[in-house]
Length: 248
Length: 313
Ligand SMILES: Cc1cc2nc3c(=O)[nH]c(=O)nc-3n(C[C@H](O)[C@H](O)[C@H](O)COP(=O)(O)OP(=O)(O)OC[C@H]3O[C@@H](n4cnc5c(N)ncnc54)[C@H](O)[C@@H]3O)c2cc1C
Image (cartoon, rainbow over all chains, first blue to last red; front, side, top):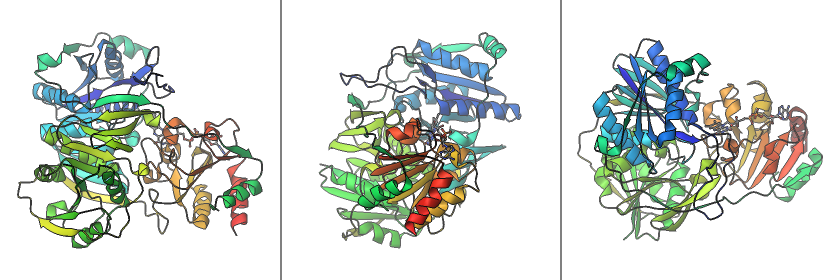
């Protein structure tokens, strides 16, 4: 079976982002870009399924500008067999991303599509669920454990109440949470090897996908900041301060 | 005409407080009607609870054995059938709502808005991006508005209402490809729920071990507080996942948040921005948590907690 795993190029999680003064967005010039951390976990899980003999091929896919091929190279260096780049300079929102992935499902017929549960730029947490709806497949979101047993996946999900386990018939869409695994580090020889792995490129038009109506961003602003308070020297001082506020 | 449908979150016995927060958000839409849909196997008691939420005009009860557990793939097609009567479909931005709502939106062919934190008009909202380090004002395109509500941004609606309850049947074939197996809760005992608590005592990697977390529980119990944790503490197995606070954990707004041995990574701070008073105890005077703390105390948590308990005794 094939596993399709979707990765997104985002501002690295260690960057402290800056909102542009004119409200037009977040400064991105010269900012370090990386693979969305949740997607890295999704890639790792796909590779582990392949290494366990449960899958034959892992295909990484990204949607984005030319530069997002860097993230595909990372996925290939981690061990993905080949990659698909759906190239566009437009801002692609989750519903359109789901349409694109659905078109690729028709082409590649994977048994599992893995995605990160959310991208840490827009924090939307939507694409996996939307893809599952469009494909009419089951979804198992926020996965922290995955067992594939023939045509069924047993997925443990991180939910507010604790850990929920569901069984889904394959094909299915699965979104990765943080504790699903710890992604491997890529080694230099793998990066070299990845350069020879194929990347197929498509446009939305090639795939016959029309962008969905989008949510319009009117402005971007900096959040209300919390003022740093005071440092107290002793527990007694702290207790007095909290008592004054009726909190202790 | 603004007609809102809110999808209730519940555990089979109780309507979750996050539903009452979504009701408060809906009240900001100047809606003509605010209705709640309760999907359950047997839901009369749940519907009665939902009917008490102030501002709710009607409760729809959709009973079906298939609705016993909240499976997005089972609920979304039923909501799609109901949705045509509404201008807005809302759910709380909890794991329940995050799982379900995008699936509804995709069925309806519209984009979804995640984590509404402020309503400017029935189609214009503020929402956080980059772990809350930027706020975008967004406008939904024409068509039904499908959104999740950031629960920490809205208080719970009062329970002085008495909406009518209407049973509905949704006669469509439901998928059997997704099956509930089990739910393991960490069983916080009698401790308050993290998302509803007015006080939260939280521990990070600095607590050091699962056993050491007993000092956190002990202080929490003396304060009547819920217990939270950083991702590092959960990853290390000190405490179960449902205690994680932050960008990818729970977003909370208690009156008092006490962080012990938590450095204050942006992903953690994303979960506590709306807290009333933040107290940080950390042995590193340069820990970033002090930049947002109302009261900071540099020191060893294992010395400070016993002293705090003494002050409470
Ligand atoms: C995509 C992504 C999502 C994430 N989501 C979340 C999230 O939702 N929530 C979250 O919390 N994190 C999240 N993180 C992780 C986050 O970046 C940090 O790694 C994490 O919050 C660190 O946890 P910590 O503060 O407990 O540990 P550390 O950063 O290791 O800090 C431990 C602190 O304890 C102090 N300390 C040690 N011993 C003592 C003592 N005896 N007394 C007092 N102080 C002591 C130290 O000085 C230090 O400041 C996420 C990361 C990524 C990449």
